[in-house]
Image 1: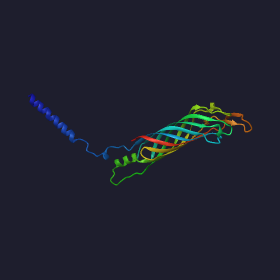
Image 2 (image 1 turned 90 degrees about the vertical axis):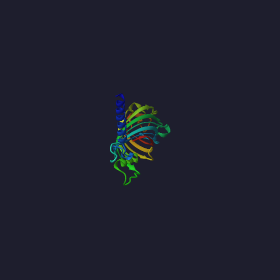
Image 3 (image 1 turned 180 degrees about the horizontal axis):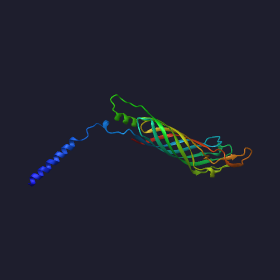
Image 4 (image 1 turned 30 degrees about the vertical axis):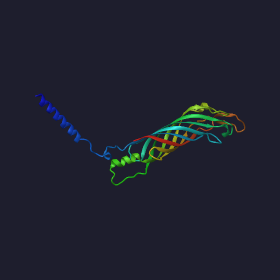
Length: 235
């Protein structure tokens, strides 16, 4: 009786294993499910200029950024992204008409929609829809976007006549941006940002003296970044 029961259990086990073996997925990798969405995460460094008030020479800036871009539908060109950056800016007193010196560090956060254009797709007539989507996900891209930006002062050290760093506060504005994938990992980018607040603290100067007149000279700041990005995640 015990021997018959053991044989029955053994037979059921072998049958179950055989049925599972036959039921294994035999689809090729190109037929695996793919939902047509993609994302990438990039970190990079940048340099550029920080344009405020009546500078004879523009202050330079140097910093780092991190970007996340999400592509909801690879068959369409639109996408959404976010960027967090930090940069340091400086100009010596030789660069200003009145011998003022600007130093500062800022953080900025940008949320942006944009358009993405794949480059170098190598589709063939034999490609199915899943394979085409995978190729689109891995394709190099040229991206343009327009974002909403907040700039936050971290360090305020401008010095000289007509300086009022108390007026340097967080400001809101817009950013025009573009990037180009050199390969699957390396990209270059350029941003131009307008903030509706004076971020250097340099005030009005009396043209006949070094007296500062109350208030900052302009209520707007422009700064520009150009740099390289490394794509850590692409899926």
